Length: 142
Image (cartoon, rainbow, N blue to C red; front, top):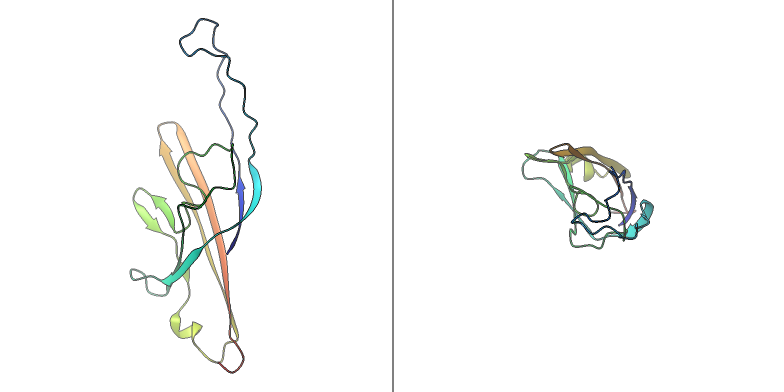
């Protein structure tokens, strides 16, 4: 699968450290490489056992992130693909009936999974929007 990933980061920067503060100061600022990227990624597609006609996409959470210096709090690509909430966990489904998918009269199916995951940690808010599209095309004579 080819994934199109867009990431952004808005830092909240406080006042500079005084010369003798315990944190030492003097660190060089890092240039963020956030933005849009394209990445190849292994995924698995399956019908859910929990939701009737629920199609789920599962990804490889060990895949390398397409960013070197784009801070990420909470979950994001590639970890977040199949849930819309982490506490409590709510799966992300696309609606597609197996009966419709395997109906020989239908030549092509397009199904969409779309959701937003928002988690909070104190004053911090981590928001990730997920949108995926899968198309199935019937082969001639099959």
